[in-house]
Length: 310
Image 1: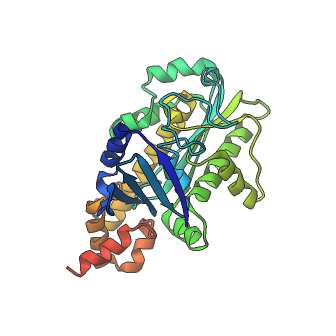
Image 2: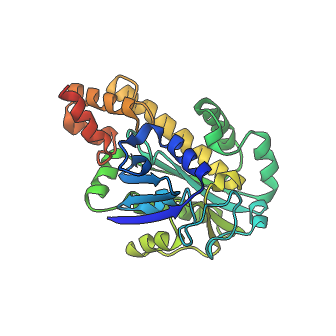
Image 3: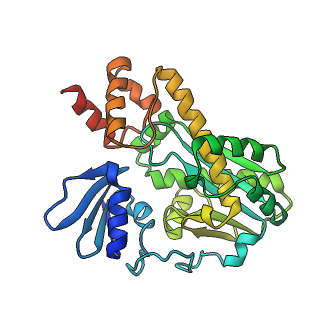
C-alpha cells in the first residue's frame, strides 16, 4: 500500500471535506475528516496535512496538491513537471483526452480522445463545449450530438465492467487501466489524422507523468512526442473539453443501458444510495451479477452485503 501526504490550506481542507461528503467515515483522533473513495483512504488533519493511502494514492492526491513539494495546488496551470504545457498550447491544434466513470461504482470507464484544430476552437465554444463537470447530463448529450456532426476526428474506448473486474483481479490498478485506455484512444486518433501531426497531445492528468509512462512501459508502449499533462485540463483546453463531453455522453448512455438491463435505475457515484441499490441487485440478480454492472473492488460491495443482513 502506498501513501502520499500533501499540505493544504484551511480553506482547501474544508473544500475537501465537502467534496468527499458521500464517502465520509469515522475520523481517527485529531483528524478533521476521513473518507474512502475508489479504494483510497483520505484522512485530513487539522494541521492541514492530508494523508492519501491505497494502491494508487497519487491519482487522488494529485487533484489537491503538488506532490513533489506538498504545497497547495495553484488554481492556474503552472509548471509542476517537465510535461506541463505552456498556456499558448491551448490555442493550438491538439489531440485532447479525458475519461468518465472512474469514480462511479456502477458502469464502465469511458475514455475519449479528440483532435481539434485551432480554427475550430471558437465554433466549439459557440456550441457550448466547456468543462463537462459544469454541464447537466442532458446538455452533455445534446452537445455531444452536435460535436459528432462536425469534422472532429475522435476515438471512444469503453472498458466494460466484466473486463474491468478481470483486469483488477489480475493486479491492474485503475490508474493503469486509464493509462492504457487513454493511450489507445490517442493512438486511434493519430492514425485517423495521419500524416497530419497535431501541435501537441494533452491528457487530463490523473496521475504523475512518470507513473503514466511506467504503466505504458509495462505493456511495451511509449509516450508519443509532444504529450503534455495538466490537471483540470478540460477547463483549459477545448480539445480536452470536447473529449470529456464525448466520454461523459457515452458513460451516461451506458448507464441507461445497464439500468434497462437490471430493470431499475442504477445511480451514479459511490454514495450510500449506491450501496442500497447494489444490495437490491444482489437480492434480485444474485451476487455474481454485480460483476456485470459494477466495479466490485469498490468498498460499496461490502456495504451492499451489509445491507442484506439488516
